[in-house]
Amino acid sequence: MTDKRYTKSNLPQKVCAACGRPFAWRRKWARDWDNVKTCSERCKGALRKMNAQERRG
View 1 (tube, rainbow, N blue to C red):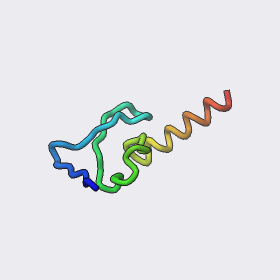
View 2: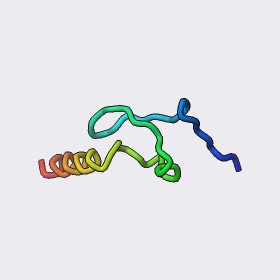
View 3: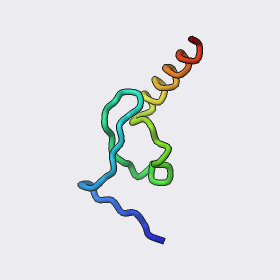
């Protein structure tokens, strides 16, 4: 089994689904990086709010 090692200069990045800003991998997201969609708890709440409004119409 190969262990993924990241250095500060070589961190994977994604774009936040709520605010559109790029954010980098964090150690606490190591096991769940594929499912991370937002850069913060605040953006996670905003994304949920946007999705709820879309469902209402």
